[in-house]
Length: 87
Image (tube, rainbow, N blue to C red; front, side, top):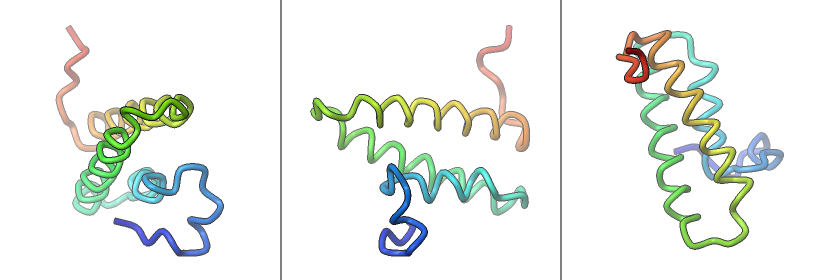
């Protein structure tokens, strides 16, 4: 998990998961990308669980949904994961 005290994390809207998500977006090496995707998925899952009973988390839940969609795209396009939406 990323260090929440680093200077770059202080400007993030959602520092609990954005560092891992952005690392996955920027990684070009397929072997390293797998690890980055896994770290991002874990961070997104844990944060979404923390927001389950939060009445104020609508915007962040929406951002998490968008992030998950982007991760799935990376997985199918860059790593050849199956696309379950194709018929």
